[in-house]
Length: 75
Image (cartoon, rainbow, N blue to C red; front, side, top):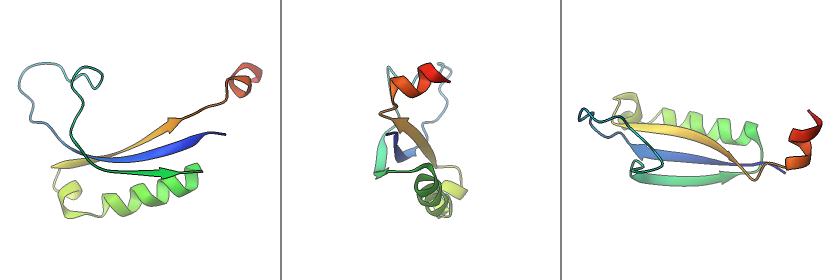
């Protein structure tokens, strides 16, 4: 079963160095788990209505976690 995380993060200012989420991830404000893509999209939509997101100071990310390997092999 694929689960999803909806993450609200602060946007880092661009300082001339390429952004790399693996070495220096953005600071997380809120993390919410969802069991379906539809639920994750609804939560992300609610986060996108926030003023800080609309002003470009925060961003919303939907991340799939726990994918089944068997489902990927059969596709």
